[in-house]
Length: 337
Image 1: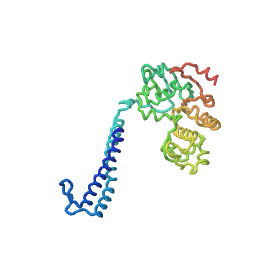
Image 2: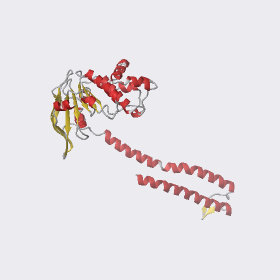
Image 3: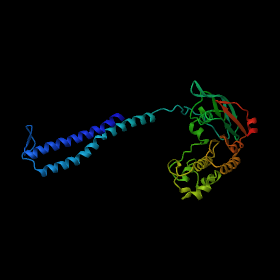
Image 4: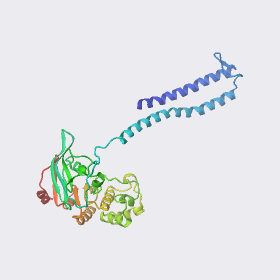
């Protein structure tokens, strides 16, 4: 498509220039010689005057530009058709993770989390997680440490059921999460990741996205807990009605993360997952957020992925993932932290 698109432009220009050149030669021949025929082909009944020739040239030049542009329409149509075929392929694809035919209801709240013999790989020759065993009672705060690529984020994706384990299981309240409705499972989880997703809407709407039925007072209270209220009211021109731009481009990285944390707090989830959620926040704000999380301990299960000591100190248990395996004991790591 790129080759033919590049070839069409000079070809069209060449045809246009050739058409004008032939017309100029033919018209000049008719005017100079006062002829009405070219090679026995009758052009008109009377000889052509200079004025008529110039008018014809003007009309010809005026029509040539739209004709050249019209030639590019077919390229655009074919490009659009190719893009549509690719989009329809994505829209019609079936997700690998689906709701069970008869989902098991999970009643109430305050459920413990159990991970048994968990293994996962994208490629069979490169396992990401191997034989993970972990029990997290409700209300506990757990920190997961490890180098990049050790499997921390993959473990969170399995917990949210973006993927299913290759082996083993993850259970919530004694029920395998593969037997739960996706809406039921994910409705109990709030995830604050390192890459914050904000919409081109107001600050109020971005926070309220976590709980659409929340009142304005509840949104402001969540922002205060995330220590975002101060910069929203003082640093932003329209306060909570400030439009943050596509992806939150009008805000700094730390401000985006605090708004995302406020959104998660507003949900009042059963499981709160913080995946490097304070990586772009200054130390003073992080200490304030730590104090907020300290007050929330016991009200929900908190899973923290971080390398910041201020948040590690919050954890009741600290685990380290190394090459997809839990190696260190929580007690020794807690003492080190």
